[in-house]
Amino acid sequence: MTDDLLWLWIVLGVVLLAGVGSALVAPRLRRRGKGDDGAPTAVDEAPQDTLAPPDVAPVETSPTAPALETPAPVAGRMVRLRDRLARSGSPLGARLLSVLSRTDLTEDDWDELEETLLLADIGAGPAGELLEALRTRVRVEGVREPAAVRELLRSELLNVVDPTMDRTIATTRPVVDGVAKPAVVLVVGVNGTGKTTTVGKLARVLVAEGRTVVLGAADTFRAAAADQLTTWGARVGVETVRSDREGADPAAVAFDAVAKGSRDDVDVVLVDTAGRLQNKAGLMDELGKISRVITREAPLGEVLLVLDATTGQNGMQQAKVFGEVAGVTGIVLTKLDGTAKGGIVVAVQRELGVPVKLVGLGEGPDDLAPFDPEQFVDGLLG
Image (cartoon, rainbow, N blue to C red; front, side, top):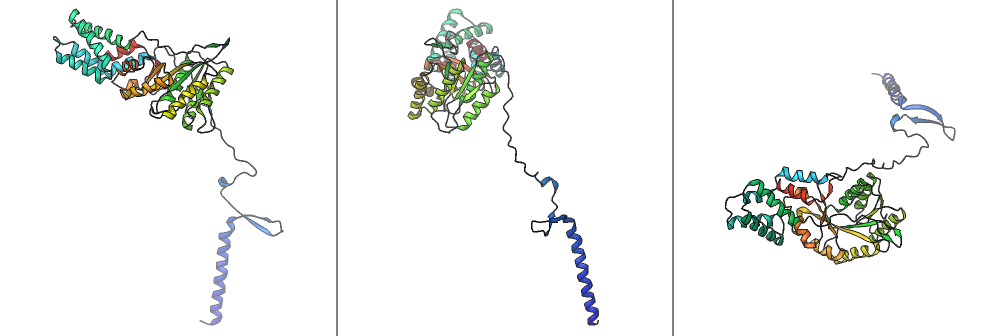
């Protein structure tokens, strides 16, 4: 091959490559224009869904408020607990009835009854009283028929639960210097008992009864607690007073909530507090401070202690310390439907000398009910 022919092939190859390159680049050029200096410019074609509209600022979407709900009526809620206890075949009631129905009760039988009561967390004192009453009535009345045994046991269990205790929540508005103030309910308890949830559910109970309510998020150590309480309130149209600063003075938040309740002429102010361990003296002192500060604006009508029914006798020490520091006036037992140890109702009342006023029936928003001794005992007996 001559040199001239070789050069010809090289030139043809270069021309061919140039043509192919132009064909590949052309689709990427959408248009040509002129820049500021008058020189031609090329604009790359980009997928249309990645192009932002010019001069349009991004829009921030604020969270929507929860839909307003109508709480379920309060009447009849305790019936649900009775039915749940009955369906579960409460070991306490079933074992007591089984032993008492035996033809001849021996000392071993009475020991079995005592063990059953103690395992149900009823406490040594109430258990002794109940057994003594049962011994006397069985001996005197000679009860053996199942229906009669059940009625006998129902009567004595009702006595130890004590239906005479006042279980109403103090929500009547006090009058101070001729001015009606909101009823103030302080809710206390240790971590994990469902305290903040209980405050939200109690707000629903009050709204269902036609009361106006303000919530105070005085658990300032957990932002999640204030958020949770705010959501509970918003669902039923109830405002929540809270601090924007984590770790703010809980007493100040509680005072602001009560002050707002006074200005807005509401019926009840519910104040949630931080979960506190009974061996932390500083935190317990703080709880006392909250109580003192609240009373500068309105009398403190109720202090409810929230206890987890499944903790049994471990809750007794908590109850005693809170009773000494906060002046507990009533007990809220959560998760009562989830325990076979219904005797805790009796034990905690005896320990503090105050009644169980509310009980948690489950996880639903309206699963909080005023405690009814008769419904409770009927549920235990099945």
